[in-house]
Image (cartoon, rainbow over all chains, first blue to last red; front, top):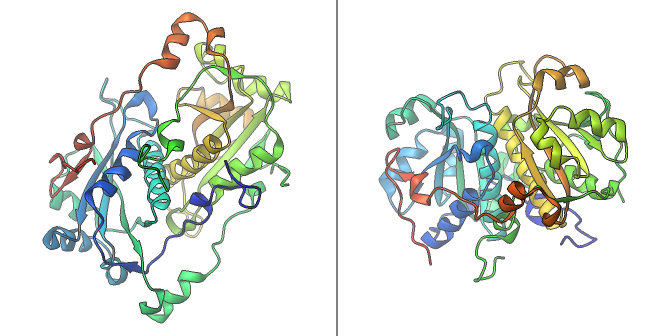
Length: 198
Length: 198
């Protein structure tokens, strides 16, 4: 249960996409729990369209290879993370090979679970949408019908003072989001809903 | 932190898509927290492509209208939930009006947050992918560029004994998922990763 002082669960509100990571490895059993959390997400037809390719820093060749898929600016700080995870969606249903309209959404649900589990264990995540998708297909022999979506950096939070100045400032900027009545409607799309906050 | 006995957070593992709901209303401040949780999800370009249309049972006309979008078999038990939420994705980026490849994934992340928050407050969710999407566009005047994705039933768990037999049995069936080495790979797509469980 959430306490009255932090009514939204702290795993959700205190999460932020940091850039200052501490380059120590994550134990296998901790990683296992991340994927176990993802595993229990719901999905349309229980299709479980999520796939992950992971590269931990203890295997330098594999870690460098995935790092190479990122833009140089992301690479500059992502190199201090512990594990990189390429997320993929299976775009066709297994039972009748039709387009799965819910594939990307369901992968999001699974990564949402993974993120909560990571935060609950003191790990941080930084998801990146910009990476070389074509090269990722080649590197990992990704078959047709699977779509690379994001690369997630996972690691322990590090010392923000060690980041270049322009990145250091971003670590503590307030996070900005739309107000609830900008995205929650009733009766009609666009009719902001004034739910009462207490 | 997770305890050794339930190493994956119970909000994730104990969640299931139930069908037995108790038809009491959910307070506004509780609903507010669900959307507040969704609000803090990360998204590509901080685009926040999630939109929600909600219909609570205290407004019978609105609740019946959204119920009508569901298939008759879902309607038979969904009528006992407290709130229906239609989820939508904004499919184009606000800054340059291009297709947002991450829209559906990001809505999944936001609903993942909403789901964890709901579970932490004793609520249950049942997400449904099968509904009349065209009719939902008409009912709620959904503009071009927004895609209806799912309808989520939210409510308090009810008495499974009151369900018809074929549904009652499904409430307690063990949940089935792929093994981790079927969806987590390293080096190459399809090369199952044997992470150690402890």
